[in-house]
Length: 343
Image (cartoon, rainbow, N blue to C red; front, side):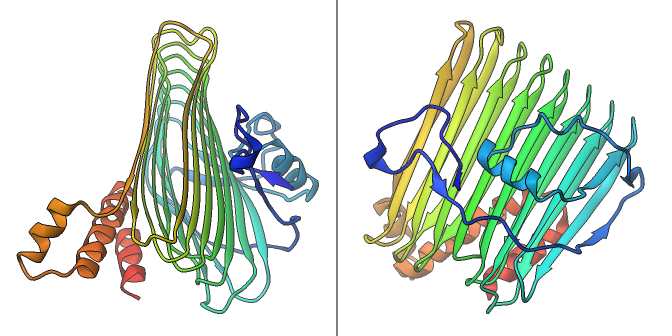
């Protein structure tokens, strides 16, 4: 099936409009879930998540709905500021899929960490769809970490809807897997709602990564930021699409998307597509991509202090990942990410 569809098509020969995903099949995950006070697993029947689009697109969502999973529903109590909620998946033998739904009620603040893991020889697929509703004045932070073995395939499709003055933040750290497809779609419907996204990735050897970010502005005075830092080396292939979509009626809204890519080897394939779509005049948008190798000035500075080029590259990689890990606001997970890098 087609996934990560670009909202406004460009030339087909560029092969950047979308990517392909194998048919969904597999077992449901049985994750380790650690709840914080003020968060509960709910059996409440609610169709409110059905209208939330996710980043991998409508064809993916339809196929995922056809699996008829019973999602894990997290309800954050109104006015409650919670500790970190951890959801950890470990895929060992067979491909596994799961779905999470998070409803953050008024004036709440919550932090979720979702971690995908697998053994080094696991060759199946580890995938999860996550949908979030942030009601008025709610703050929801979701960290999504890929610590799978280098033979795994992964996908994550995230979608959110933000009410008045609500804030949704995502931090995505993609370090494992040989073929990763990740999508992130955020609907800023409420007055003065916000989305902040931070994505860091490492693509090496023969690995592939395909990412699709969409910020959909429909409410007035909404704001979105997408900050992406990545490293591509070996024969790695990476595609990143970032779209800020200003719809008619979202006056005084702001959007900013920036990608910084460090290329380690001449054989890499890097595609970056930052785009702003605009149906509203009174808005402010910025976008851009910085792509290149380690700067001569930085390299000279490092070498003058006895640091060779490869070591300098490793220091830069670690710095990018360390910055993203701090955004998780969870020391335990940040240490786990850095330990994964050491191996």
